[in-house]
Image (cartoon, rainbow, N blue to C red; front, side):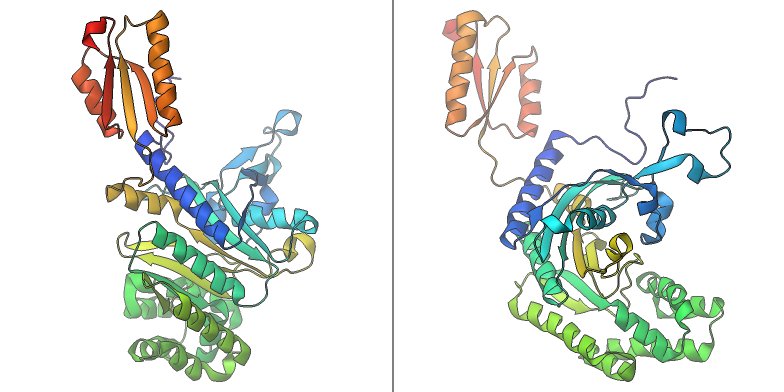
Length: 420
């Protein structure tokens, strides 16, 4: 089989300019989240396949890169199912590994525990703009905080970080899984049909109200129920206060404490947020992961034309590992899409040191070369980034390449001292 110099489909090599931006973004993320009390952790990229296929990850479970058993454990000839030859898989997100991590280490962690995790994940997805099969995720999560303080802190920490990275006029869309269920119950849908209803509702931004209605009818739901359901969204859209309008219409189908808590999240964020984003109640927001139990949120950026992050509350997930539920809530920034937007806007890292290239003629050696290196070392002590390289025959092209990498100054060293 011939060797290939190209990366695997859906994965990419990262060139120096992008790597500089990625490193900068990570530094801002860690610094900002640190001010909110989040601490960094790390989990393995490989998880037991049972953890990854426990019906918590929605459609992502169809996209797992699975790992064959090894050595004597691998018996392909006698296997009749995939489960007999697979024992591990590459993680498709950071939440499942984090919950396993917390379940395994809770005794050694504070309560509440505020975690920051940045790492690669893998999905056998169809590659497209801003979407790869290997990509970096950046999550913050809070364990052990049952109150809405968790949601408020997560939203403010995430929006503060995005603002520091230069993003403005974005939206944080917010909803609650309990509100979704209450609306469906109000319309008369049976509880076992909620998932089907929500899958269709999630397409609202693509197919519109009429498209949602047509699909619900195609799925066999009664027109009276569908009309009653969609009337909620029409009323909310026309109202100046969509939260109160919708919650009053649904009425007894919602717990009063939940309503008060949801309103407090919005009020608290709006009272303390920067002016660079808008918090918007979106009753059509679903979020695909089935592990969400309460508040859900998503970042919408006009520059990208889609979501650049999201998250929510998942209070029942730790219990699947330990038998005891623990309150949990998280927010994930769309790291790859943020880097893409910065790259496309021509973003330059603002805190980079001055870059100087020392071009050394081939004949410079021995004591003369040591002097060049010593000079570079002194310049580095002064905070400069100094590249020491041999001078190419085509010096003009070499400088053009270095300028593209950010080098602003060139110092040339020749064998003939008169040229220096």
